[in-house]
Image (cartoon, rainbow, N blue to C red; front, top):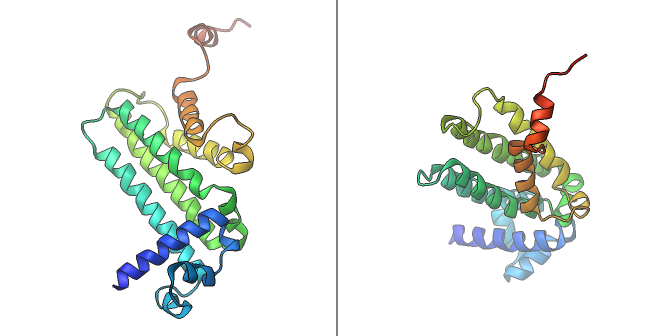
Length: 203
């Protein structure tokens, strides 16, 4: 019963926070939606920020389980894993990058730090594991600095996956992630362009 009540509270808070924004939702409203008293709610969570932390932790667990399932699927080749991971992460990350949730940076900075850590863990660590698999499979050059690649992916997404900037591009979050990876892996040069840039320069 304790776990059931806790799960219901987290689900209700998740819905309200991501629909209206953390700052606009009160504990009273969460309790009212659940049909329970604030006293009962406070038996499970000491306050609204603790509840937000639980919501983010649950979201992080869902991301990690999904990504780990993709990485562990030996029936998938490297390219298929890369494609599925981009789609999975790209569809879910905008949830915590939504306009309503961006106010967390000011209203609950400790939780925002937790969100940034989630992005780093997913992109740097999980993508890092996939990049290493790509090297072992002969799909990525062994001389490439994978740490730099992870840094470039994370830096680009942190700069672009915010509502104000994403709205300026004719791309969904999934398309943005796919385009970032494609440009990084395949490049922007045609074969002619590669030949030209690799040609010796006469001084």
